[in-house]
Image (cartoon, rainbow, N blue to C red; front, side, top):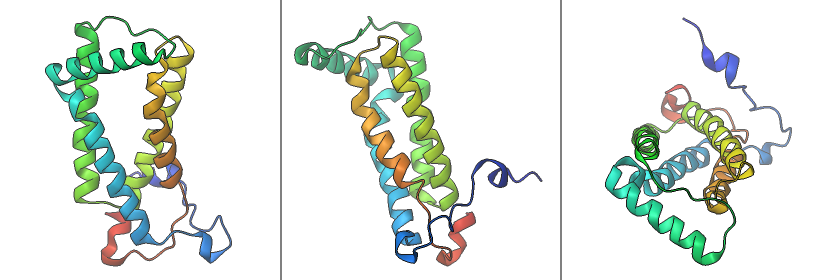
Amino acid sequence: MLDLEAYFIPDIVNVIPSERAIMKPTTYLRIVRSSAWYDLLVTWPFATPWTFGWLYDQLARLASTAGIPGVTPPLDAMHLLLANLLGSAVIAWSLARMLSPSIRLGRLDAMARWLFLCWQIVAVSAGANAIILLFSSMELLFGILQSLPVRPGIPDNRRDA
């Protein structure tokens, strides 16, 4: 069986020589769970057309009131579909990290966050409303934290769970 982790998720445990600079496994797993809770709280409104429509209106109103630059186009069926697919997938992904946090899931989540951050920056650069950057700050924070080196030796064999 192909070990994707060996190809795509580098083991950076020994990158930083100082033992103090390497995160404890229990701390890392807490970060993985925290990022999962954040994602669940922020993205659940994306999961249904009704909740996303309400959220979209609130974000558009906030952007307009605050004078945040960029376009907030009228919501259409394609926007709803894509937002609902995103919300549904992120809810499932959040629950997976809450119920079985591991270094592997944390590393995969970090990779997803770096990709989300890139696409958010591309969207704003292309004229999308800069209110998107409110989400980008948390993508950056959790992307950095979940990319940090972790001391080897997770109890209960959770490293490869």
